[in-house]
Amino acid sequence: MNLFLYFLTVIIWGTTWIAIKLQLGVVAIPVSIFYRFALAGLVLFAALLLTRKLQRLDRRGHLLCLGQGLCLFCLNFLCFYTATQWIPSGLVSVVFSAATLWNALNARLWFGTRIAPRVMVAGAVGFSGLVLLFWPELSGQEASHETLLGLGFALLGTFCFSTGNMLSSLQQRAGIRPLTGNAYSMLYGAAVLLAGCAAAGVPFRFDTSSAYVGALLYLAIPGSVIGFTAYLTLVGRMGPARAAYCTVLFPVVALSVSTFAEGYQWTPAALLGLGLVMFGNLLVFTRWSPFTRRLAA
Image (cartoon, rainbow, N blue to C red; front, side):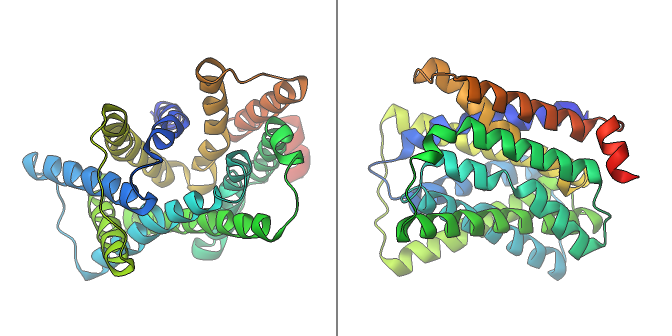
C-alpha cells in the first residue's frame, strides 16, 4: 500500500505543473490558489459529511488544522509562485527537493526521531541528480538581488511545506485522520487567502475558458484532494523524511511529460541525473545496501 500511495503522489504531483501553467494569466496567483483549495476543501468536506466519516475536532485539533492550512495550503504556494518570478522553475524544484532533508531535521527537532543515514544519503544523491537534470537552466542564472530574493522565497516555501508535514504528523498522532485533517486545513488555508486578497485589494476575476476550468478541476481534485491525502498518509505511515522523497522524484515525472508536451531534450548530464535520482529512490525503500551499512557502522 505504501508503494502505491508513493507512486500515486509522484504521478499526480509530477503532472500538476501543466495545470498550474494553464492557470497563469488572467486570474491573479493568490486568487487561483484560493479557488483551488476552496473547491478542494468543500468537495472533501461534503464527501466526508455524506459518508459520515468527518471527525469532530476539539480546540487543539482545529489549531493544528489552522497551522497546517497556513503552511501547506497557503504560504508555501505563495512563496513558490513568487519565487518563479525571479528564478527558473527548475531551480525552485531543486530547492524544493531539499524537503527530504528538512523533514529529517525537523522530525529530529520536533519528535526526537533518529535520522536514518540512508535517508540522508538518498536525499543528497537525489539532490545531486536534480542539479544535473536542471544544470543548463541553473548555469545560466546570474547571481543578483532578484536571484537571492527568489532563492529566499523558495527556501521559505520549502520550510513551510516541511512544517506542514510536522503538523500533519501531530494530527495523526492525535487520532485525526488525513482526510478530516485535509478538509479542515484546506478550508482554513482558503479562508486566509480570501482575507489576504480582500485586504490587499486583489481583484477576484475568473477565467471561464475550458483550459482554466479544466486545470482548476485537476488541481483541486486529483492534485489536492487525492495527492495531498496520499502524501500525508505516507507521512503518518513512513515518517516525514522518507515520504518527502516524493519531492525529488516528481520533477523527473514533470520532465518526462515535458519531453512529449514541450520537446524537452535529454542530455548525457540529464540522463546521469535521472540515474542518480532513481538510485536515491532505491536507497529510500531498500533497508540494506553496502554503502548505507558502511555509513551507519
